[in-house]
Image 1 (cartoon, rainbow, N blue to C red):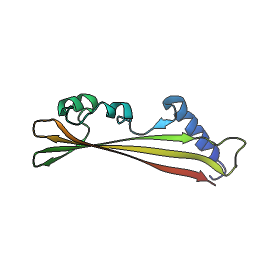
Image 2: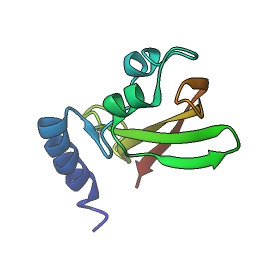
Image 3: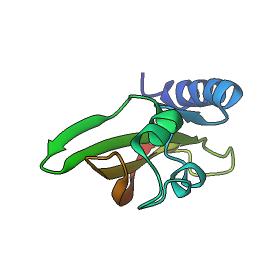
Image 4: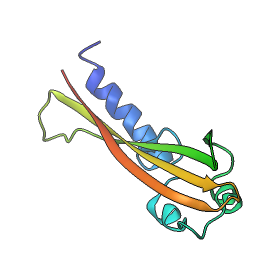
Length: 124
């Protein structure tokens, strides 16, 4: 199994590159250009629903609601034939978060974004 792992990873990653451009996982809805369209004291809850749909968590608070969104994309790096033979590949998942607080009238009161990455490197 260990002897075939590097080729198996290459085959799988090539498949992903071919069909997804090196990305897999959730569709990243929280790209910076889309999030930039959302403006405090201007954007309404209805407008946000048109951008993202209903795929979010809602927390009801006195005076309104807080909506939580999360999106992620995983990218793979294939080993180079000239590189370290023990390196069989690398995967990195970037997660973006978005928190929107709306008043009772549906107008955006506060916007908070976040981003973090998880990296995994496989070696034999």
